[in-house]
View 1 (cartoon, one colour):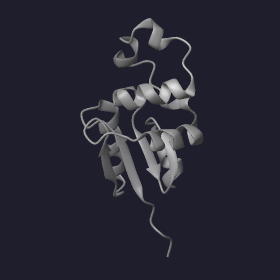
View 2 (tube, rainbow, N blue to C red; view 1 turned 120 degrees about the vertical axis):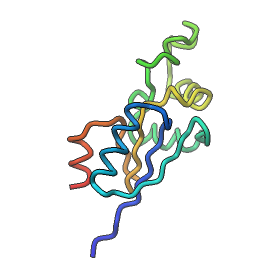
View 3 (cartoon, helix red, strand yellow; view 1 turned 120 degrees about the horizontal axis):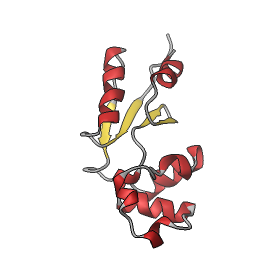
View 4 (cartoon, rainbow, N blue to C red; view 1 turned 180 degrees about the horizontal axis):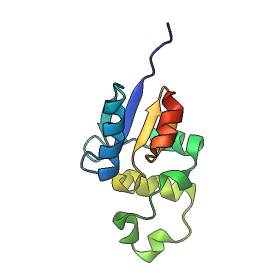
Amino acid sequence: MAKSKQITIYGIRNCDTMKKAWTWLDAKGLAYTLHDYKKAGLDKATLEAWAEQVGWEVLLNRAGTTFKNLPDKDKENVTEKKAIALMQANPSMIKRPVLDVSGKLIVGFKPEIYAAAFG
């Protein structure tokens, strides 16, 4: 029998994209743990590991209002180190959701990508 996948969905509880993701998971009968990083926070080591796996550019939500409302000096010349510091200080700048499936990350919600990941 195949070992079941451990699923953790990271994000913010009241985010519409998060709701779409967990509705999809629920519809497929997949069990998951929710980590609300607005409430529980997210440590620097986790952000660094994610950045190494998927790239900080994928994780940093530049389209959101939190990023757009930053002073220009904070939005310019963003490096990995700066991006990680910004995301740690302002978790809503992390693209949502981040789905950790037994150590493999899926960033954002697209039903076709979720379907491919879960067969």
